[in-house]
Length: 168
Image 1 (cartoon, rainbow, N blue to C red):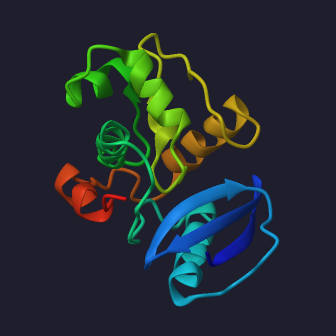
Image 2 (tube, rainbow, N blue to C red):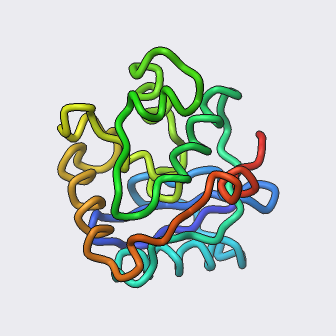
């Protein structure tokens, strides 16, 4: 599986590609580096994101997960940059009664940042958890970065998200 790493303000991240789509974004540097055209495009878009000049990604995504997880991840992609939604809101949106199940799907997200699980917060306004990087500090950094970015109000429709996340 081709991988390519990049250095970010949050440390090294590694992108993985399979069958022409991004399937993972991991914290840390990958051992093998293979600069495929898609991975270079993804790296460049992430660098623009961290530079504050991009809020929407234009990449094919194919995360491995259950049908329920993919439904949740599609819903996450519809949250505009610079905004948040509660776990309960996402649960209602996907027809689930348990906000906790949304938290579990978020924690299983294999493509953080590109599938913006950091945009989901607790109903009381608290951050909730975050499994990437330095946990809640990383989540806060990503939310603050997006709030300050030009074009942070760019809407990313659920229809667009559904076309972008392919079934695994």
